[in-house]
Every structure is written in C-alpha cells, then in structure tokens.
Image (cartoon, rainbow, N blue to C red; front, top):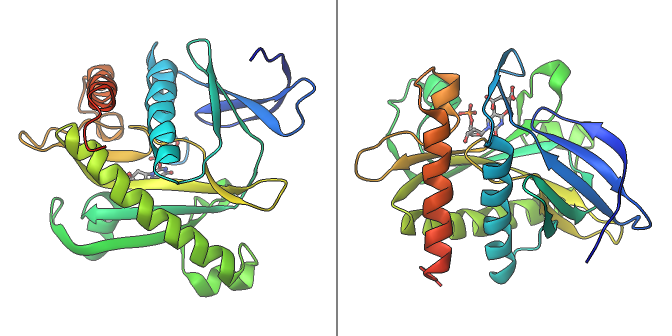
Length: 246
Ligand code: TMP
Ligand code: ASP
C-alpha cells in the first residue's frame, strides 16, 4: 500500500515518529543511525544502523505475529522506515533476563554469564528525567502506570516472547542473554508489543565464541559495532529464510 508521511510527532534517541496522512490509526517510524547509551550521555552511531535495526525488528515482529504475539508492525518503507499501528506506549520498560549481565550482574554482584535457573522479569519506569529507575508492581500501582490486569497481560506476553526469541536467536547460534520490551495500547484497547527488538535492545552472545553482538560493543568501547549488527542481521535473515525452528 502507498502511504504519505505526514508531520513529525516525536523524536526519540533511536527513532523519529511521524503521522501518516489520512491514516489516523497508523504512524511512520524512521530508524536513526545514531546510537546512545547511559540515558543519552554517550553518543555515537554508524551509517547503516537504522537500516539494520529496522530489518531485524521487522523480521522478528513478523515472526512473532505468526506465533500469535500481536505487535505494531504493518509494513516496511524504504531502507529505514516502518509503518506501524498507532499506540499509546505504556511507560514501563519490561526487561527479561536469561543470563546475568549488565545492571543485574552489577546490582547483585553476580558474575556476567551466570545462567539463571529461571528467567527474571524486571520493570523500569520509562522516564528519562529519572534515568528509567527500576520499579516493582507496587510502584506501578501507586504511579498508576498499569492496572493489575494489564500488567498480568504484559507478563504473559513477555514470557511467550522470551520463548520465541530464545528459539529464533538459538537457531542463529546466539544466546539471548536479556532484552527490553515496550508495550502499547491501540485505540481499541488491545495491548500489543511496540518499539523494536534489535541489537540495541537485546544482549546477544555467540553461543560458541561468547562474542558480544549487540550494543554492549558501543557501551563498553569494544569496537566492530557495525560488524556485530551485520552478523545479527545476516543470521536472523538466514534463520527465517530456512524456516528454522518453525
Ligand atoms: P541492563 O542490564 O543495562 O539493565 O539492560 C538490560 C537489557 O535491556 C539489555 O538487553 C539492554 C536493554 N536496555 C534497553 O534496551 N534500553 C535501556 O535503556 C537499557 C538500560 C537497557
Ligand atoms: N537506551 C539508553 C540510551 O540510549 C541506555 C542504554 O541502552 O544503555 O541512553
């Protein structure tokens, strides 16, 4: 279908959101080449990042749709754009962890790479001014961020997504260490997966070499950032083409 991009609504750290003319229930998302970390304090980027993250996200979102996980993806536009359903983002960042790393390893003094005996789900308050603090279900109730019913739906979906993504990345020779999800509510009140699933929002380690193939290469100045994102793109594309794990 042909869509006409309208005026800019919002610019985030990794994407710019626009209206779509005559389509009030849709938006156009432009994936940026910039990379930020530590709440925007560290800045960088590379030429094809927007394209790679758009492609990786769209492949994953289409896969999740096939597996019955509703999400905002409608269709890709050009190299870096995506038409999605318009949602109101629920201001909770949902992090699911399978292996200890990052802030969890630091907070509990756990060794990075420690396999967790069961996945851990965490919630963060999506609020840049506060630096996205970790919160629990009581904070969520008092802040009025989501009802108990909404939160249990989010938990249910995040659990299913963890299973599907672990399987998909597993078929790519990657360990899904942890990842962050955002959910939104459509005009009809349906809760769907939104935002993106990419090396910006997941930790992905090569199963054999344990090489980090995600944004930690940028956060930790490990080099070869573009090469890592390209590897993930290539492997995800191949796995889906082969129908691996279908
Ligand atoms: P963390 O270990 O720094 O808390 O990150 C957990 C996961 O969430 C990791 O895969 C990176 C992702 N993440 C984001 O997508 N956005 C963020 O702002 C942060 C802090 C983490
Ligand atoms: N997403 C955050 C930022 O862009 C933090 C991170 O991913 O490390 O600053």
